[in-house]
Length: 133
Image (cartoon, rainbow, N blue to C red):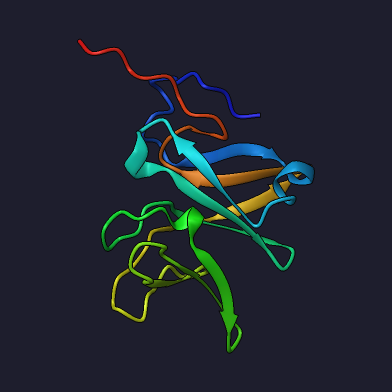
């Protein structure tokens, strides 16, 4: 399982990050995954119709929490709607009918684990605050 410690060698390197076991992560349709880079780099991990998807957790419009948004399917397109201003985002592509674009991330399932390709360590628990210099 992802840990709370941050290794300087893996920070900012785009790598496959283990989030957790499929058996646990498939129990919820959407969950927040914390980034070691902070609040603005957190990820929403979706499990819909037997597939995992990942995108930035903060809406590209005004930073709303997409993990709290409604998820709907219309004409075969899975979308999440920002709870703040109802902006829509295609869960597969990150595109919105408003012209905005969310960052989406590759997800793979391997040996019972769910991995997200991301530039920072990820965890289901918040990372401890970084001490100020």
